[in-house]
Image (cartoon, rainbow, N blue to C red):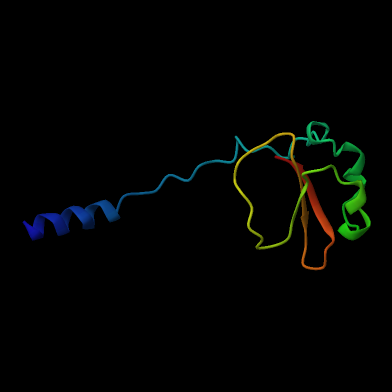
Length: 95
């Protein structure tokens, strides 16, 4: 029995693997609609310190630093501001 199992594993390891082609991959990411979370006017703040922008952020906005803990629930009206270690805004998204 062990020999048959070993032979099956050995034969299955010799099978070729199909590599998917890239025909279904979009070249550009779609534009992000920030109007749902009222951040459309702040999209030009990317690259600036979040401290300069805090007073302009809508209530309930999450400022997320690297390795920060955040819930995984999706709320399209909630704004998320992603910053780097220095507090510079890297990305703005709804959810």
